Image (cartoon, rainbow, N blue to C red; front, side, top):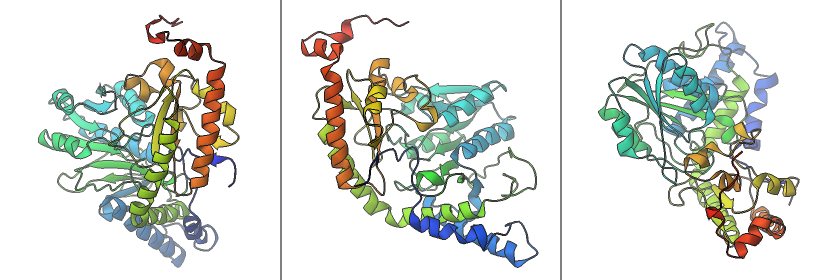
Length: 404
């Protein structure tokens, strides 16, 4: 077993060697610009893009013309939300989203609020689910878009996407989802799920970084968006810029591998995740954050009371790679906005760790993680005054804390 053990697959994944093999020729041999239509180099590059587009579309049940390549999910999310807002602003200016969304969605909505948008941020219950009745009640004649994450990047919780889309359809409102964590991990079908726009990223599914896609529905309804990048009219006029041929080829192969290997991989990872989780839950005052019935098969978010996660992570950061929240906000010392929105206290949110397992996770790595993390938690609690008080029977939740 090689150290450190990587259990942060929600942040990013290593490229599958089969993906790398697919990409290599497009760096030196088939290096043409896919927009060059007058010679064989361009034709070969365009052929690679076409094949990859078919592979990406097949993963989510879309048509090839509905796939717009981007630099990643963040750009795809910006293109979708801003593109819809600018296109449909004559119909309305109201957007609905959820307090537990990724910052790519929340920050984009905050940006549009400065442009005159009205945004409703739905709360969640303690497991992370939105209230569907509350969602429907929030819709107004001015509502043009509902955007709800398919599966949460911190807890793995899977929202009832089909029911959300049914509500959106009844009111003639477009429905978008950030499927960055779901695509390639669980079955996602844009038609069965009733999705109008869907964003996802290559590097979350064993493909290269710097490439992703936005699905834009072409019929029933036909969705229109305003481009956010101008200069050449690439990607059906929705996203100008020379296409990243090697990256897109790798993305396509990554989608193909996920599509064919998903059932077996999900079952294996769920077994490893449960093994890790059940062992760590043997520790006193430890709990799962979020739903255990409706979540991704490879994710576990655990809170360890009276242990500061950041200091805990420093104790084994050279041997195990995990995180206390989203990679995009890991530089912040603030508690996870996802866990806070689910009702956790600052202390409990700061005492939580996200475990993300993946394609190359082994049983030996899980067993090593169980032993190492258990020892680290027991060591931290042994010198914790709060833990000593807790063991003495003091109700720490009843003690007022200094909030300065």
